[in-house]
Image (cartoon, rainbow, N blue to C red; front, side, top):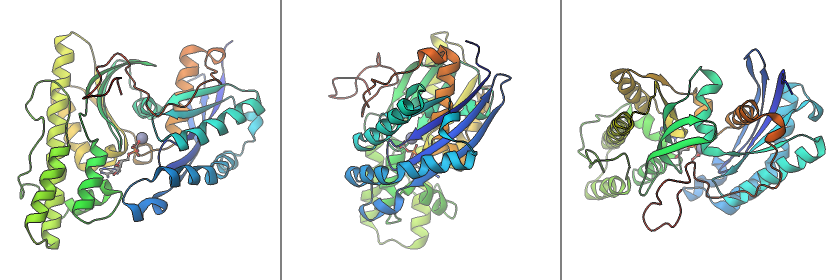
Length: 361
Ligand code: KG4
Ligand code: ZN
């Protein structure tokens, strides 16, 4: 069947955003985000300094119908005009995943349209292609609250993991760093704001894994070093600015070092790539974006990063991933109503498990 036009509804509920979006795709390649609705749960969790899974699940249940109805209303569509529904089915917190998947499946059954389970990480990784013409294969640095990975993206559902974190993710490190500096939660955006007023060379913090072979990361030592430094001095506002700047700078140096290694690993294996993409919530950080853009320039690569509202969790990237699956596999081959949400869902199941884990993440 030749597909001429698609309108795909996307649902996102893996962590603390309940989101719905509708994207229209035309066979001539024209793409339009008709709606991109996000309900953030920051207020529900901020007193606890992190996402509380039980509270998150209840809040998703409370808001899912509202965000989907609003996505339809803003797009001036009713449910009959939707071609397929794409839903983030993992990795993430099981309560939210069940809410999103159950809603998506019910919608698909009622509207007699395909239900496409989407890996949330793959949605992040494909998101630059929603806006830019990024050709496969490319390198992706995924930096989010729960994941830090360098990936070789060969195509839809064809991804090799080159490096991953052995402990904390970058976003988590920003969040914990901000807690240690008593700046609030979520920490990435606040640290970035504080860092603008600080001297990034004032404090010398350790750079875990820097200069080591391979492309893996480790951030727990950096967090502990920050804690020790903060505990040993009486903090002034100026010191908070300098600490935030030094912390952010150190993280950026580690990211650049690991990406250089990943690129050289791929080149040694004669794997081609022309583009480097930066995705995930931490990609909203301008300082980090500039450092990685400079790296891409030095390496002769095109650099792509989605706009701010598509970096942090959103449903437009999920709708887009659904469209990519339909274009790649055909609308008759993507329905998977039996899919069970997966709190752990590795992008590259062949990759080696980390630490004492039995399976890849
Ligand atoms: O991708 P995302 O929205 O959710 C996950 O899938 O985890 O990423 C959220 C993470 C949080 O840890 C948050 O602190 C971080 O992204 N983040 C930032 C910035 N904005 C969000 N980190 C650094 N700088 C920012 N401007
Ligand atoms: Zn995410």
